[in-house]
Length: 284
Image (cartoon, rainbow, N blue to C red; front, side, top):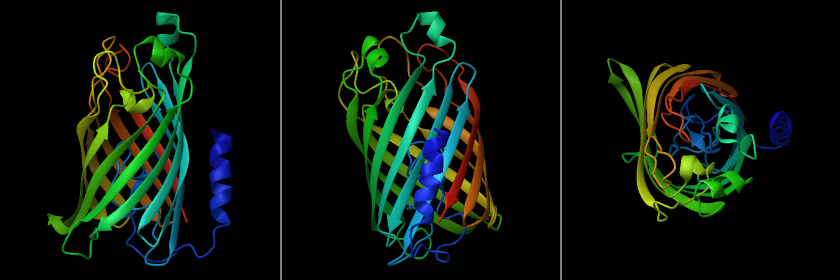
């Protein structure tokens, strides 16, 4: 994972004509665990970096989520052009911790690669009368399928789509700016795909609600909440919706930090999986 992040950063530094000016600081968001621009667990309609018309924007990130019985590590990058289209990639490793011995599992981790495409359809997060609306597709591939297959997952790869809208309301909360995001996802991923796709209980896609609200106390600090609805396709264990409370720090347009308390509930029979989320992002 560390080598992947170093490679991401090296690749991004050789890009030319990347935007140094452009959109307001923090309006590019952070990087989600699936690689696209947004919050930690939800996508936003904004695109990676701060590029505007005919400019490039790019990000590289590393995220870790520490839970009582598990650990998730993610690294990836995203590249956007013309404030119109974004390509992203994320590699995830989910360490199974105590579950390995409890269930005598053949592997001690689960892995997934996520390749994303996002297109801004219309609007702007600040300057247009309409909110910024984007359509996204994500191709997900679960890289070690033995455990997901064992618990009832039907496939190791799938494509899911989402429609996201984002809007910045100037001075809406006692004079502070408020960024509101909402999205609908069409998916049958189990635990976002780490446990495969579809299951013995349900194999069709579900329409899932996601959203976040962030208050920007100044150009560098943001505090907010996120929510992500999830399906319940496997009979061997329940699957909880996710939520978090986060603090984001954006010292400049080239680096950002997000610290969150994540409430992930039940994951693969183990309940109360609530813990810390930390993400570091470089923007170019």
